[in-house]
Length: 499
Image (cartoon, rainbow, N blue to C red; front, side):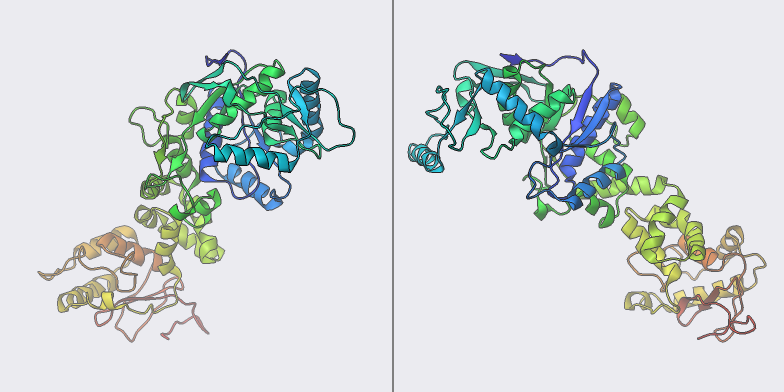
């Protein structure tokens, strides 16, 4: 018997069915993305079902994290989210129908009897397959506790034509008589997932290949109920850089960590997950619209993909550079605790800041100099760059800038270009000592950006003992100490003074 694969012959319905026992795993997010794209590509429906049958481990916090992660990734679902626990009575109904049709049986085996069979299998070094004496007995045993088990076929084989793995065959003798309903009347996962998929009209089951073995067991239920068989597509799991299954030791696992701790943008994470196991020629940067147009199951790889955090970071850098400045400011401003006025300065500086950042964390660090208390303490590495040639260059620059009538980008650029350069000094080799050596201003263009932002429209540059107002921002150039910026509001009658 074979579960065949073919082009969709009925409206496509896919689903993502996470268990709310923790965060939204990055592997689960990729599964959700593939299901979402397949449904959108075919104009079908994408459903979200929370499999909360394990009440002891399911938490509201985990459910909220799943919904939040899905929304952040832009994976909207059709209709409301479903909760598996709402359908327990329906699950029990199906188990009893299977009992009536002879495809299930009541099993009264005790825990001691099960343990004895398991020990015997271990001693004989063979897989444990339950051998219940109640399999072919129909009579009930009064008030004795029992479970309802599947009466799995013993002969023949089951074949699945998986859209990713290809044709996979399992001998029916390997399928055990697993439990459908526990002794307390609650359904097992194996039963609940099949019933829910059928009742929700799911046509394609796209999930991790760790569920491939489950598919054969679930097909036994589907066939016992004479239900339509879904198309299966079991996607290889994500591995870490070392080739082992992705785990906590490899770093971030939850989608929220990629957003909150690593500073990733949702479009970058989505793009990276899409390419992690699926491809469209040589395309690396793929928009959501292109993904919907191009996605298919035929180009999902059969081998596990290795998660490359550096590649994700570089891809995120592309999306940071493409992002709207206002949007980036909205994301960074809360991290710096900025006022509305300070946010405006951040927006102004964003065109110069974002080309030098791959993540929102780097962008936040790079922007922090704009709002630091002045003067910024000079670091040893910065002091080392203040050679006699550098001091001479700074002094000459101060004279040029002090003569400017207009404090704008073009005027600043022209003034800097006119500064005579000592033979051993250049703006390419001199960065602002007031900026962090690892991220600060390293070239003339960054220098200009600092000046333009810190003295937005006008500034006066005078000797180290004289200050003048420039939009409540003070700029000081001192050849003895390098660049030092002080930002503070005027006092008293509006005149500023040094601190």
